[in-house]
Amino acid sequence: MNQWFQIADEVFFDENVEGVFILSDSGEVYVLEDDVSKAVWNILADSPQSLEVICHQIKGKFNIGDDDSVEDDIRDFVTALSKIGVLNECPVPADRIS
Image 1 (tube, rainbow, N blue to C red):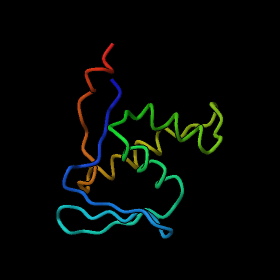
Image 2: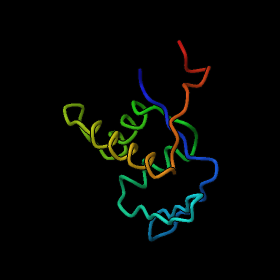
Image 3: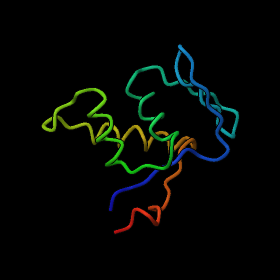
Image 4: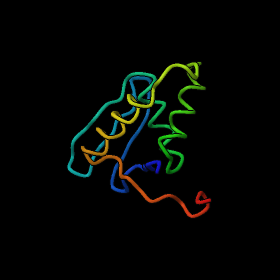
């Protein structure tokens, strides 16, 4: 089953020209500076998303071909954000269950 993620409720973030600044509930500040990490964050800022949707949107945004694999890198990045507590894995929304 595909994993779904959302930004943790207690996380504050702001984006400016320098990147996305993330303040965790523990007071740690993280900065996303590269285009791909900022794009992944912005996808999740809209609503909870599946890894499949995130990968599809990143491939489209950066013109990455279907033969090129980004899934492992995106999974690793999202997992790292989960481990530091700024993302949470969440259940599949009821309207997405088929």
